Length: 195
Image 1 (cartoon, one colour):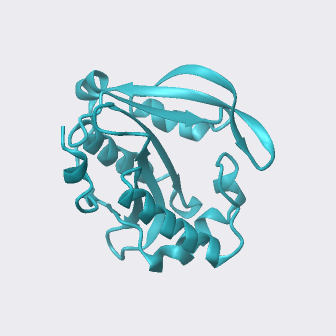
Image 2: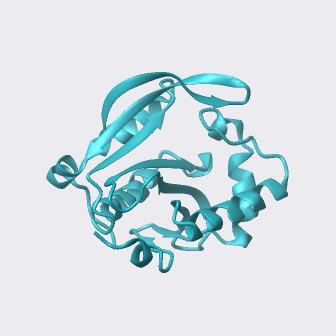
């Protein structure tokens, strides 16, 4: 397993045939605002909808702080052709010595339905089970979020448990479905590992 210092020495950029997964930059704030201001994106999400550029700028700053504090790696998903930010995905709740983590993600509706999130998450999972030496990755999904559940199932995640009232946002409790993927299942059915 890479040490904490090695893993967080510099932001790990990943690439796929159509995407760059890179560090979030200040100039991404307008794209973040566009994505996280859309009700269809944040419907099942504990952020937003954003209404001001300053809120998106705080997200940029928080991602940098979380990485510097070794708390989370949150990649901006950018198109290779023009480096436009179209979403994000990341790994959190991981520390060396505890080979488990949680994955989260969102994508602009303008780019959904093209297999881009599957492509991005395949790269993130390959990094997680490879460089991070994870043994288990979890995802928490609102049960009504059928597209996310289908995506995770295609990646090999198994639905494990309904966690009643586990989420709380916008003044209400939400049930969350726990899904998990273990390293052995990933190694047996891994998609294309991207660099």
